[in-house]
Length: 312
Ligand code: NAD
Ligand code: UDP
Image (cartoon, rainbow, N blue to C red; front, side, top):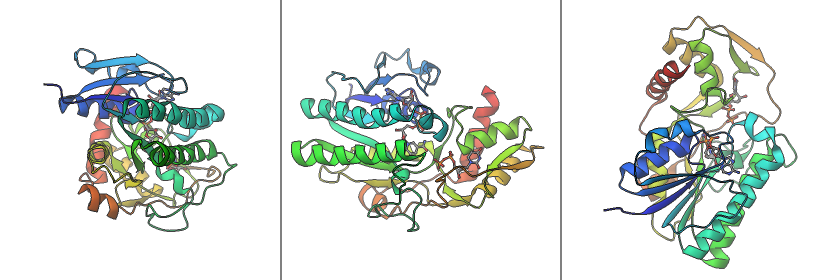
């Protein structure tokens, strides 16, 4: 007996593919929509034999019509090199994608969850970051196409909810890693693991003292599903992240140790507007969703290293 029909935009990406997999194994029918900008068919090829899975090439900047019970809106490049590659397109994907998916949710009365980001906090002056913090974003900086696009998407979600009673859910995702990150994605975990496995130099930007809090993908997927199922009045935004905070230098050292690598650490200039610190306050997720991340960094890194060792 199929439980729900669910649309996942950006479903062929890193997070989307894990979400599709989990929703299917929970007994749902899943429609995966992607334009393959940063995602790939390879990420969902193992799902194609499942009669309850459907893969559609589509760009969310164009309207899309379907009947579903729930929509998870993940379509958007997430790594700085990819979202900066075509900054205008990144804004369009966030803003027009949100408008198209919210319009669809309004018409079919579906619940819709937005994959927002810790980047809405910019380079935060409050630490750790609670959902009530408004952020410190440079609106004309290199990261603005992503940060401001995601902030505008949150605004659209809230206003479709207030004006049109659309049933919204917003999650602010902190740095998430795991199998199926693209090897050339440019994000720090994939870069360091690939470099370490090839005994190449580990590229630290700046002095490595900037911090991030890394969450394993399975913990995030659990949080997203709990958020979608949460009580109607709880719209978020809610932080989903692992509060364990590490410097980028600590991450590099851990990856070198876990891979027994001969790689050396080399320094490159810190990109502009690179946040100095980031750590989620997850009190709200604990209270509303009874959710806390379960997988510590070292354990998640071991699984991720196994994956990259098998694909590179
Ligand atoms: P990803 O790049 O692997 O996945 C994004 C997917 O969206 C890709 O499959 C890509 O092809 C697709 N896409 C991009 N533009 C599209 C468009 N116009 N139309 C249709 N599909 C499009 O990145 P990810 O890490 O899986 O991120 C998924 C979502 O989660 C993104 O919205 C991202 O902003 C958000 N997020 C991720 C993280 C993280 O650490 N991974 C953190 C915060 C937020
Ligand atoms: N970073 C690094 N070396 C790399 C890739 C990234 O030192 O090869 C740094 C980057 O400057 C940032 C942190 O790692 O301070 C996290 O970068 P990522 O692109 O993964 O995510 P975001 O900055 O969006 O949190």
